[in-house]
Image (tube, rainbow, N blue to C red; front, top):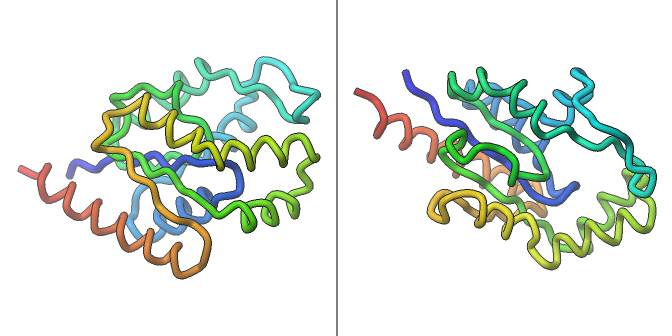
Length: 172
């Protein structure tokens, strides 16, 4: 059976990991958190003191994931998307969260003021949605609200229906 590859992206704190893991549990697709893959494989090329985080080596990440993506049936979770090959994904979901909710989520993560402010700005200006729209065919990019547990459940159900339809239309 042919299975789709799904990208879940959005500003840090919008709920990508929660959605991705739960979706993988319910769909049987494989879940990949790019941050975890980078950490495990030390796929970095330096450290950003200003943002207090390692700098991702995007080429190494793409090389690391290439075979798994070719097999299909993968849910990828990452806050950036412009460096992934367009051919990898059949659908892209950009999660969006209200700023007041997002601020609280990032604050509890201990983000410094600069990092917190820039992530909120990133959400306000729809930076990741724009990035997704420029990186993939517009008809495969979808925004989903991610503010409440009810919206999480709606998103899971909507994506599960999408997977079911995709599999039906791509089966011999």
